[in-house]
Image 1 (cartoon, rainbow, N blue to C red):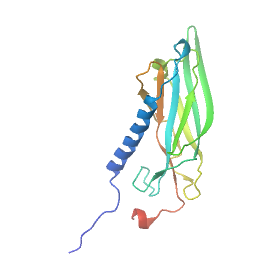
Image 2 (cartoon, rainbow, N blue to C red; image 1 turned 135 degrees about the vertical axis):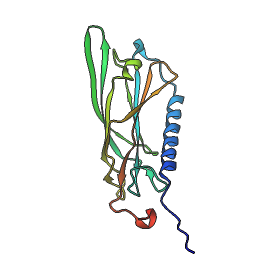
Image 3 (tube, rainbow, N blue to C red; image 1 turned 90 degrees about the vertical axis):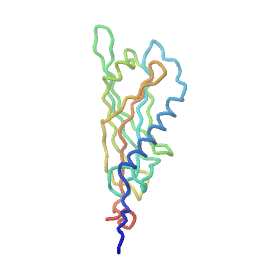
Image 4 (cartoon, rainbow, N blue to C red; image 1 turned 180 degrees about the vertical axis):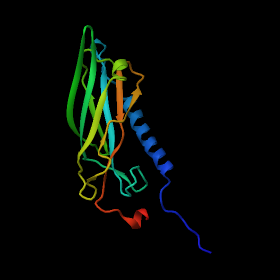
Length: 179
């Protein structure tokens, strides 16, 4: 009798692992003590993850790893709510991921941008620019506008988490990942 054992990772379990890792990062972000905002303007943080998708499944698997040193371009547009005017604050910057594959952008307080309004009015996009790894440098999930707004216990602190981005190796390792 021959037994068949699947070596493919349980995608639901891997997605739960990624959710757990993201949640841990957010808890760390909440533990930071922000400086009080002047004039009730928002302190906004935009963050996300970059990982290497070894098995080409567009989700974080047991063979995936976070990519330190990856470069990401972040572009955002926030509507400012100033009496009698409709202003927008737009910017585009590049950030490099840290040792855990996290990129983070702290946006200084700006007149008219408040967390309550910013939470419903931002438009941010993160795009892969380059990988620091020669063995994992093919862009896969390379751009995202999908974000989660995270409520903070601190007044007027906004945290926006963008969906994870990933690179792949040039060839899929069938021995490691299966068919």
